[in-house]
Structures are given as structure tokens and as C-alpha cells.
Amino acid sequence: MTMRRAIELAERGRGTTYPNPLVGAVVVRDGEVVGEGWHERRGGPHAEVNALTAAGERARRSTMYVSLEPCTHHGSTPPCVDAIFRAGVERVVVGVRDPNLHVSGGGVERLREAGVDVEVLDGEPAWRARDLNAGWLSVHERGRPWVIYKAAVTLDGRMTVPGERWVTGEEARRRVHELRGRVDAVAVGMGTVRADAPRLDARGVDAPRQPRRLAFGRGPLPDGLLLEQRSGRLEDELRTLADEGVQTLLLEGGATLASSFLAADLVDKLLVFVAPTLAGDGPTLTRTLPSPVSLKRLRAEPVGEDLLLEAYVHDP
Image 1 (cartoon, helix red, strand yellow):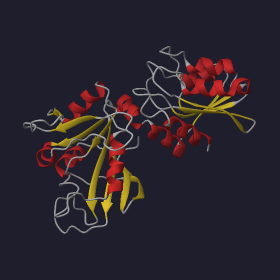
Image 2: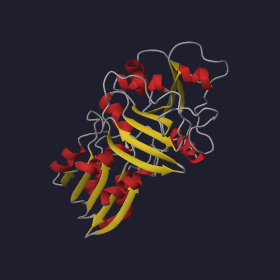
Image 3: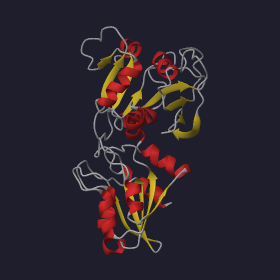
Image 4: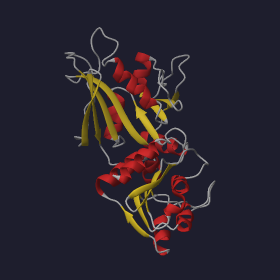
């Protein structure tokens, strides 16, 4: 439960810590929470330091729960492991290890060498801690952004409804704009560009920042459409985007783009909004795939009159 609280705190930094990860920390002594903190903004104190500051002298002989392994490097702030040593914390529970071993990782070993008892979680708590920073972890571990494919379909799996502009209702569409405001880039294929001339920005919501807007494919972009065109191999383009700082990529294209990414095993998560409508005809979610794609962690959530299905292709 305390690690879940650390993850909740970490979420408060979304939109202000980029490109750093989201981190939350909770300090517990004698069964009582004595300090909480999160990484609030890039260049500011890390979650561990904020939690220890809140705890003060009560941090001595305490247990710290932190969603990401404490750092060991001197950057814009001193190493968090040093602050933990000085505060007299006896035990540290870590949600996920830092994959950036050459820069900030190794905190678990440093803590253990200094006599601090360290536990690295596994199972569901660890999965939740990884999901918190799926994009940041993907860039460091896979060399590419975390890719989310979003689609809206009718109950019979069609992506359009004859005579209607929208498949889903207003609440589902608002959720998509909120999602755009949380990712680093949004992309469609050239078929969607030619058919819809999409803007792909986050509108009508309190977005921390606007995403980069991309079009995958070849052919000229319509005049006045402010999209970046990416026409290389998908794997190469994703590596380039990661090098440019894109950690999370939202795909909003049609079946052709979805099938290309799925066939190349480049989709990590699916978000499918299902409307209570039978279209009877129209394009489907994907085209023919070379082999079935197994999904895990399926979850359903009502969004207005629609249903949001969430599933993972890969673990974060």
C-alpha cells in the first residue's frame, strides 16, 4: 500500500519533470508516515530529498518507499543515496531499478554497501512502478519510445459509422485530448492525413504541453497542415525519435498504420474505445497480420456511453 502511495505522489510531477522520470517517495517510522515527497520539476530536488525534508529528524531509523531506485550521480542535484545515508534511514524499498547504469543507476548496491537494508519489489507493485515511467524505461531499455495505439470502433469492430463524423461520444473524445497532452508525440499515417487533415493537438483540456505531431508515410502533406513527416523504416524512425527526446508515442492512424506497427512488433499498449453502435460496414481495427498478437492485462472502463478497453502487448 505504501508503494502505491509513492506512485500516486509521483504522478503529481507529470508534465513538469520531463525528460526526467516521475518519482515518489514515502518515509515510514514505527508504522506511521512521517514524510512524503515527489520529484516536482526538472532541476529541482528529487522525491527522496523532498520526503526526507518533510520527515526531518523522524527519518532516522525509518523505512523509505521509493518508486524508482535512488540515484548515485551528481547532476543538477546531489546523489539521493547520500541524502538517505545522512538521514539515517535503515531500510529502503524500491519499486523498479534504474536502467541507466552508466549515469544514475547502482543506488541499490551503494545503499547495501553502506549497511542499509534494501528490498527491490517484484510482481504487481513492480509492474505498477514500471508502468509509471513506461516511456522513460523504454528509451533506456529498448532504444525507442513506448508506443500506444489508440482507436475508436463500433461494437461490430468498424472504425467509421455511415453518416456520422464521430464513432464515440464527447467524453471519450475528451479523454483522447487528455491523453495527447500526456504524451510526447502523436502520429497518424498518410491515409488519415489525406482523408481527415487532422490537427493532433490537445484541445479543450488542461494539457501540460502540446505533443509533437507526426505523419508516417510518403507523399506530399496538404498545404497548411503542420505535421512532421517521417518516411523511413519504422524501427529507424523510432530510434531517431528516441534520440530527439520522444519517450511516448501515441498512434491515432487507421488500420494500415496499426497493422504496420503491429506486424513489426512496435506497439506496446492498446487503448480501444468501443461505441454502443453497429455500423454494419466500414474499415476494421487492423488489416491482415502475419500472426496473431497476444494481449495481456485487459481492463475495461466505462467512459460516458462508451467502453474503453486497455491491454498491453509488452510489459512496460
